[in-house]
Length: 458
Image 1 (cartoon, rainbow, N blue to C red):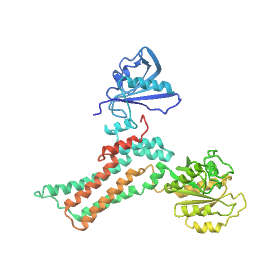
Image 2 (spheres, rainbow, N blue to C red; image 1 turned 45 degrees about the horizontal axis):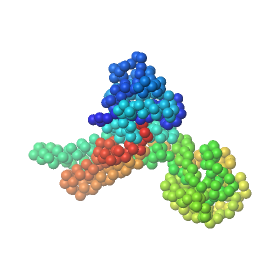
Image 3 (cartoon, rainbow, N blue to C red; image 1 turned 90 degrees about the horizontal axis):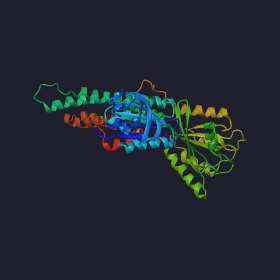
């Protein structure tokens, strides 16, 4: 049982029409009662649940703000605790003053994600559903939102629980045969056991097959634009965004820091990163940008390497070629609106296993062609978001891999005719790894780490 009452601002900071302060815990009603004045309501605990009441928040005799107070009684609330939400006027001062009054009268400032953490600890949602909450908030496209909503509804949880139930059923049969040998129980059939394990592994692998696509939907394709200075990297970013996000000049080295923006191409989020041109430089600030560009190459899902068609290849171009040729790279031969000077054959020979696109960032039709190419490279259409449980979280993927490996160890033990008690160890490990996804077998430190990544007030 969680004893204290927490409060936080649940709306984004800044000026807005409404600001919301959320209060959750056993003393939520009494705390808000002490600062809420209404002609019709004297005690919030006496009103019907899920009702809204007009009044004022006060500090003694001083009026702070005109508010609407939402009352939600346990257990039918987000946290399964008594919850009050104070809807006041949006603005830095008014919202902060109302929160101060709530805290002064007995509430504690909530930690990041603590409301959702309480929903998990109180059994309203499991851990994978809790993680879906932050995914909904961070969604970049309609597809990523749909993926997160499906997970929040428990689609993934049901699939994991189904697999766990099959494992526990096998474990129970084995443990019974070990603990009660005097009873005439059905003998463990290794052939049947092997088939059951293989079927479970097939279900796990089916989930793992969705992981790469799910990660793209959730996090976006980390796309790094590289090239020597003044080849059109910032122009490409601006063209994809349809706005002048990056400064473009004819002076090499204009971009000195990393610029990041998300774009949505046919439901696929791309995190486009415009980097400083890679070259040798004595400028300390530019050199920092160049070093960061090289570091980002190692983390990229896709590299867009831009070469200027209107000038001969340089040692800088060839240096970058060697950096990116073994990675997933889309080569853009830019500035087709100018006379072609470059030896294109050298580039096509170097990138024989990569896509090469000749275009101009000034031509809208070429930009559309580029977007179609990007879509084709990452169009993961082999599962239906509406019908499938999808793995989009790296933590879930790692747990599934570990569970699958443990079940593989079970099969190895079966092939060597090992005693059944040896099988129980690896089966138990597989069960525990799967339980990490739903939160049934996870350690408290990891739970705290997961919720610390949430925003305040959620």
